[in-house]
Image (cartoon, rainbow, N blue to C red; front, side, top):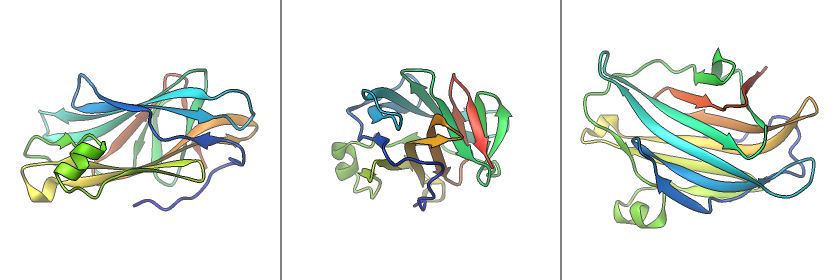
Amino acid sequence: MLELNLMGNNSVGRMYRPDKILNSEKRGFILFTKYKPNFGGSMKSLQIELNLEYNLKDKTEVVKVDIVTEDKTKVAVGSERFEDISKKRVKTKTDDINIDSVRNFVKPDGYNLRKKSIPAKIKNDRGVLFMDIFVDSNKEEEKEIISLIIYPSVIDNTEYIVVDADAKTPIIVTNENGVHVVE
């Protein structure tokens, strides 16, 4: 599990637990949630789409996390764990791993987690959303838990949705409004 290292000022902003979780058309799911901005105002919608993307040619896989905000809010990530790919995409500094079997996310709702006795969970603590997402595989050594932390914060007088992530599998975070790597 990731340790919380808050970036910026998030004294007022709050992230809430997902309202619903739906399967995506790809190998993954979409979480629909809301957050309260640090600059006040009404709650805003936030969509978090997680997908596993397999590269058949070199047998590697990445986790894609797409953050969709209601307004023009950008995403911020820490430079100790992420590197730029483009203005709208960053990738964890994790090495590629070879995957031999088909892996799938276990949808993090109560029914699926209890049914498979999985320790993964989603929780909210002090306005920060903590998610441990289980990736299932036929091979024991390819199973893993992906940890994500998401919360609103103010960095250099600009509101961001801060994302931190940890996994053996490389993670690509995208946002249509841009992703800012914070030193």
